[in-house]
Image 1: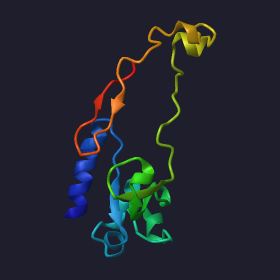
Image 2: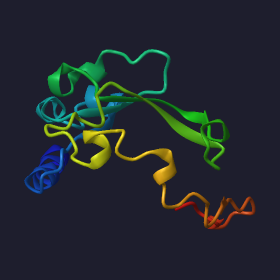
Image 3: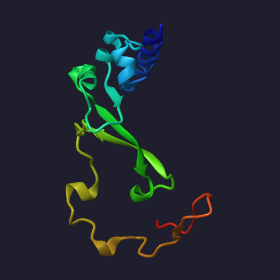
Image 4: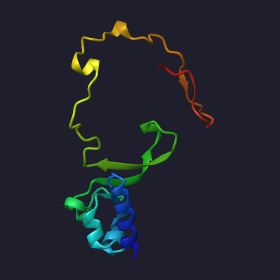
Length: 143
């Protein structure tokens, strides 16, 4: 039933033009809490906190993991976030696909069209400040 529910949900996502996938750990795959047909059907974000990804990660779509969550104790501060511990992932796919049609604008057609002196906003209007006491960001941003 669990696998059928996930598949039904993912089908709704795909009908809305989203790419669906599953997040699973080794236990769900090994014990078949997620049925093998479900794991093989979708891109797999595999969670296993270990130095080795293991063989169960290769049971997802195309017989490979799309992402591997390898720990939950990453140093948030070292990665620019306030959280003390963060999940760490390795990504094995290209997250932003190549555009089939290149963007059309003045700069991409001719980079010499707009020079640095043409910037209509040479001075910042606000500077962003971070509240270390735990609040929202505030301050002066740049146009």
